[in-house]
Length: 521
Image (cartoon, rainbow, N blue to C red; front, side, top):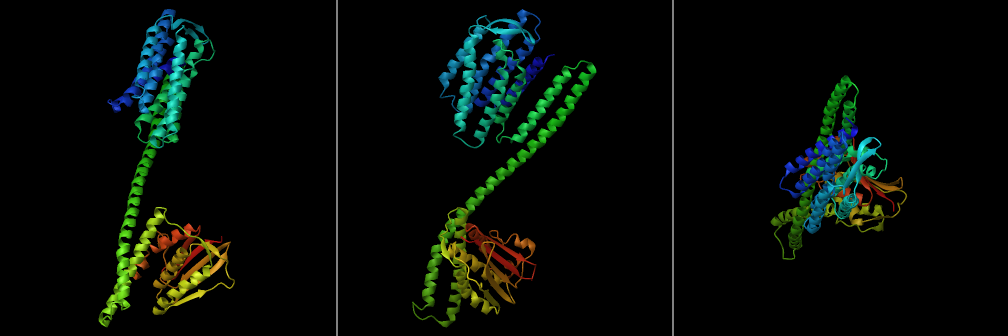
């Protein structure tokens, strides 16, 4: 049994299998029907190719060479039909398709006459090889014309779209090049060009690739395709060697080896596919999380905007009442009113933080850069918070740099909010001792250090405190009003300035140090 008989047989069996597989997936779908029709054309060509190769007389070789051309005649038109359905152009090109099928049937009628296949003659490696009749030449023009036109439509669509469809087109285009270039080597010998069609075996790989492109909702990565090519190529080579072996023992050993490698290859492909499918599920889950995250951000934005106006109104009226704009207020209700005012201020700050988060996560947060001295910002924050430290009977030490630091380009309000958050936290979580603030230039950057003698941080807390809605154990224990937004916003503001913020601590009750580093520019 020759190489050409074996490759023809593999192509025939593979085309029938994959054609039925796709068709039975959804028999009512036009795409599946047209692909099945295309596979049928390839199967007819491949099947009669095998019979023609084992013909023993000139008459039988001529008949079977004409029979195989019956399949070849319909390969380009069914391929075009499949591509038009795939690209949803079949209704628009309906008249063209009808004329194409009519032309193919005319060639089919001519096929069994000398006008299409004249005769068979001897060629290198072949005892009987067909020679073209006068109508074979226009058939070849149709064959390659339809294939090239199909590729043009695929390429044109590929340039306009993205996503899964684009990837499917890439698979179909790539596999078409392999299949048609492999199969078309047959036609060279028709014109006496000494190029034996050794690439017939590539046709089945072509059909295999298109099958995947149709049936898989999410196409496999190149690793899967390369694995499949390796396995198919190796099994095909081993099978050919086994069938061409000289002794029965070698044939048996060869077929056994084919069986073992087929099992191994199947397991290998299955494991790779499983990995890709798992990744696909993770991607879907990630996409759903992104949708939920977007919905959460939009909700925060809308809710914050809706809360901001009434809270500002409440603040305004409370301020006016406490300032006696509406007259003298009894002393017994002043303290409750002041408590309401403080609670309202906390709500205002929370709403502003939520608005900042929604702007950050939607990319609408803007920074207005201006030249400023960082020491001046730190000094103003220390002056604002020193009374809070005095009330807790702890120190708040600001160690100004001995050599003035240069001005840097920053958004003053945002960097002030970062420093305010760091120093305010140092005061909140320190019972005894106090907090020290330093500022220095280091490695071409300005570094701010806020150290305290407070409750400290455990290692796992350091990794999480800069995440949104996340707080350390001390925060939950000593400052229940917090929402876990401040440090997250501080980190985002620092990153918007191409800077960074981080924390260090030796552990529980050993204090902590927070760092803010900003580039000098």
